[in-house]
Structures are given as structure tokens and as C-alpha cells.
Image 1 (spheres, one colour):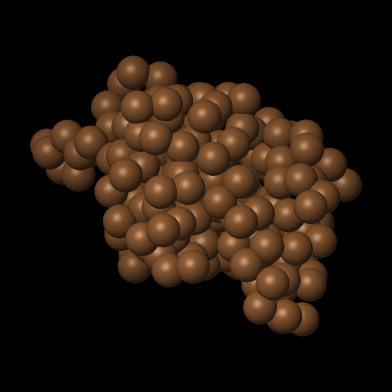
Image 2 (cartoon, rainbow, N blue to C red):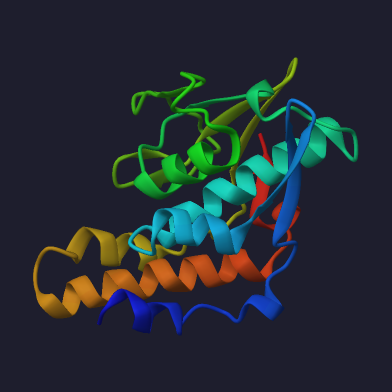
Length: 184
């Protein structure tokens, strides 16, 4: 299955919940949207990409509400090293380029779900407010983790892993950020 056929498996854009949020870069208001994030990253890690987008979106909603917020006012400290989340953090707030991103897979929180390579544990600092976030209960599903573990065993297992990433992305695309995540 090539990347273009996977895009046809994503939920239609018209059904995406809250596909856009705004940040500022100086005086310029930036409309950051999921479609552009997917185009920026590709779909190889689309589940993590949408998760990362939702994390920043939710942190901005909590910390700033409708007030203007500078994209360089966001820092991320995480235990999850996924490429998709990294791409989302770079696309939305340039956190990697500007060294406002740190990943330490040894971090642990008893209420955060453990992935294959670190916990789904994210501390976002937005201006002077810090919050610890993790996906909502049941996200991602057990099938997602099973597919990841088995993905190198066969072509069929690799395809199942891609399908699980798409299913995870579709779940996150259909929910507003406050239903995708929980604050610890």
C-alpha cells in the first residue's frame, strides 16, 4: 500500500474536529491545521503526528484560551520519542529547531500509558504555565501496541501496523483535543 492510498483511508477532512488553531509569530497570526501538518510530515507516523498536533492544540486552549500566544512560548518535555509527535511539535511551534523540545524515555508517571519506546507522557510549558498530558484512557488501543510489536515479523504484520496507525489517527481526527487527552 503506497502513501496515496493510505490518505484515502483517513477520515474525510470535512469530518475532522477542530482542524485548525492559531498561534502568533511576532505580529503574524498563523493558522495551523491538520491537513498542512500531515502534508509536512507525511503519513508514515500519522497517528503520532495527529497526537502531537492535538497536544499542542489542547495546551494552547488551556493556557491561552482565545488570547494571542506566540509559538515560541511553547516548550515540550516528553518520554515519547515518536517521529510523528516530533514533526507535529516542529510544525506547530518550531520546538525542535529552537531547542524547546527534550525527550527522555526514562521519564515515568504511573498514570501515563507505556508505549513500545517510552511513555505517552508530555509536559508542555505554555508561557509560564506547565501541564502534564497523556492520551485519554484507551488511546491508543491495545491492538495498536500489539501491531507495533509484531510489525517486523512479516509484510502482513507491517501492513497491520500501518492500519493501526491510521485507525489511531482517525480516532484523534474525529475528536476535539479535550476528548483525545487528559491532564495528569
